[in-house]
Image 1: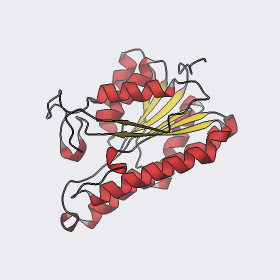
Image 2: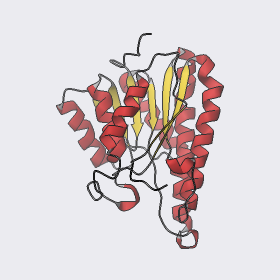
Image 3: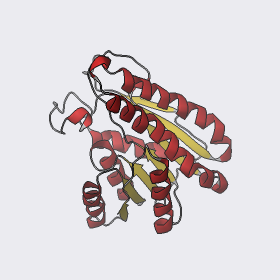
Length: 241
């Protein structure tokens, strides 16, 4: 059973300016993938792309607002103009706030749903027809363990991630007969910038390290073409929920 060789493939990674997305992009490039890194902050994206190029990889920075269809279309077009195609999409962009619903503004609620759920749907829709035509493609949707569990004070975030899990499962069954994989990752608490935090603020022995989660995700992409990981869930041993 031959593994998929990622060398020479093209990937688009959203939320790639920092945290898990940055590590996914770096690991893909390390394995020979040409990478388009996307997020809203262009300066941070350029630093990630430069980091990959300095290490011998090939990367471009493509700013994107995943909640806007016109921005998604422009970004996907830019990647195809530069690299010719998109073989791998990693929907990693995400936002959320930890506070009671009554304290969340309408803008925060809208942004949570728009980025986490609508952005995942938009990017998938944008890349899918070409993947179906080629008979090959891999889409990884980074959800959360809160797409399967519930906790208080994060209701909009939990709702958005439940939506991502449902969307991913439905899409896999819609397109796997055409050679396209749609896989879901539901990690527990990762030491990243989520909710305004900074890497290094949690005990590394307690929370998940983003580079290790990134490695596991890219390993998943190298599985034989007739295998698919419907959903991968990973937690730190110290997590209570």
